[in-house]
Structure formats: structure tokens, C-alpha cells
Amino acid sequence: MPSFIVQFDNVRKHYQMGLVTVEALRGVSFRIAAGEYISIMGPSGCGKSTLLNLLGCLDRPTSGRYLLGEQDVSRMDDDALSAVRGTRLGFVFQSYNLIQQLTVVENIEIPLYYQDRPEAESRAVARELAARVGLADRLEHKPFELSGGQQQRVAIARALVNDPLVILADEPTGNLDSTSGAEILRLFDDLNAQGRTIIMVTHDLGVGQRSRRTIRLRDGEIESDSNPPGDFP
Image (cartoon, rainbow, N blue to C red; front, top):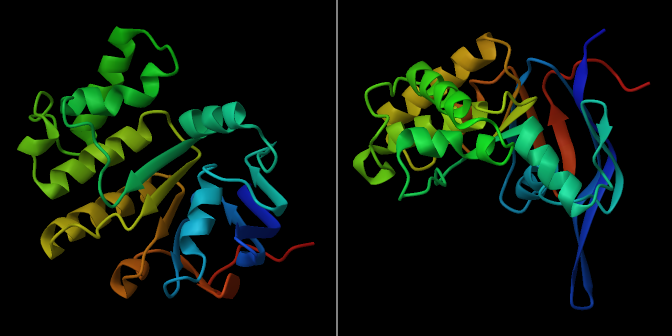
């Protein structure tokens, strides 16, 4: 029996646009087992961004239930959701979202700062992760001194620093050339081989094919799921 670390049960998300109700997600249900590597794909407007925001605890569903590990995060308040984001999730964005005034090692440390970890311990963890993503010789560089691929490696190291349950990647190769993009995808392959759970939103079929499972959305519903880990009871 797989250990499910993400469970969506009939999740709906509606937005009110004046007098019009927009149904971004329409009763989405799926499970994700520990160690899976999943791509979420679909045309523009299908609900990918909404789904990612819910998975990342950046928003709450209108109805339905979202379990992250053993926690029901569906109705948590803002402070509780912030704590979940800081301790249980790792984010990798298309635009890297690095702080330009900070060095590589300082950018990696940021999530630990909010956990009140001792400075020496945080610095040691950040240095180790920088080495793991191939940046041991760039610790004191600022983001503007790095290539796009190197900046994304910093972002991946930062996503790992809190030992998250899930890594969420939003078009992680979208700003990279083909060579740098391939390097980042190999890094994700390696992380998954080490047991990391990765959920990647992408419009690129070639990128999506790197994962072991693809969930396709259309009009706010799941159109297909290539390799679900068992049926719902």
C-alpha cells in the first residue's frame, strides 16, 4: 500500500469576478505517493496555476479536502499555511525568485532563517546543498553574477533546505536555453532517484515526458492521469 503524502478529494476552486463566478477547478481528486515524479500539463486556462497555488498552500479550496502528509490544510488560517509552506514544501519558480543583494549561500539559507535555526548550523546546511547542486565554488557570488542555469540551481538548493515533503516546480526550465534546461532536468531526475517527491507544472511536452506520471487538466477537470497509484476507496 503506497504512502500518500498528497490527497485531493473533490477539490473545487471558484473565483468571483464581479457578477460572474469562474470555476477554476471542478471537483479534482487524486493521490500522490511518496517518491513520485509528476508533471501537471494542459492548455492555458485549464487550472494548472490554480492547482499549483493550492498544492503550495498559497490559496485554499472553495470546497473539498486537501491532505498534506497527515495534515488537513484545506481550512488552515494564513499563519498556519505560512508555517506549512516554510517547513513542508519547497518551491522552484521559472523566474528563480532569488534576492539579488544576497549571496548564493545566503539565498539558500533564507527558509532556515524563519525557523530560528542557529546561524552556524544554517550556514553549514546551505554550503552542503550548494555543493550538491554543483555550486561549491560560487558561494559568495550574487545572482547577477550567475548564469540562468546556476541561478536555478540556487533555487533548487533553497527548495531542499527545509527537507520538504514535496518539491513544487513551476515551469523550472522556462527561462533557460536547451543545454541549461537539460542540466536542470537531470538534477530533478537525480533528486527523484534519491526519493524526493516532485510535482512539476509545465507546458513543454519534452519536459513532461521526464516524469513518471502525467496529470492532464482541461477546463478545470482531470482529463487523464497516466499512472495513478491505486484507486480511491
